[in-house]
Amino acid sequence: MAYKYKPNKSVGKRFKVTGTGKLKRRHTLSTHLRSVRDGNKKRHLGRPAILNEGHARNMREMMGIKGKRPNRVRHLRELKAAALAATPVAEKAVA
Image 1 (cartoon, one colour):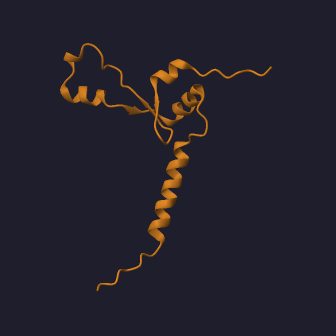
Image 2 (cartoon, rainbow, N blue to C red):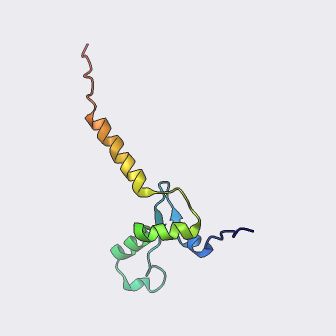
Image 3 (cartoon, one colour):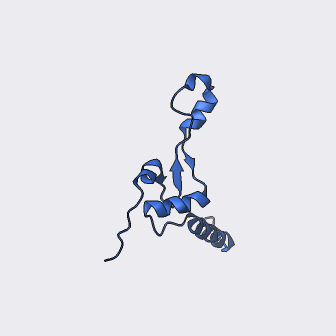
């Protein structure tokens, strides 16, 4: 019998996957003793951060996510934008 892959549930609870496959994480230092920090710091810590791609690959593997490659998505979008910029735009006739 083959080994059944079991994803790491704790990783799935700590990270959220974006549409392109990037992983969002929460900041530390944002739960208690917040009166010590100024408003700018608290606002910054409240916003999610994107996980470094080197770590994100490992976390996606632990979560059991296959086929999500953010760098490839970014590359394809850049190629598409470059192709659109290179095509000549027909000038509209003014009536």
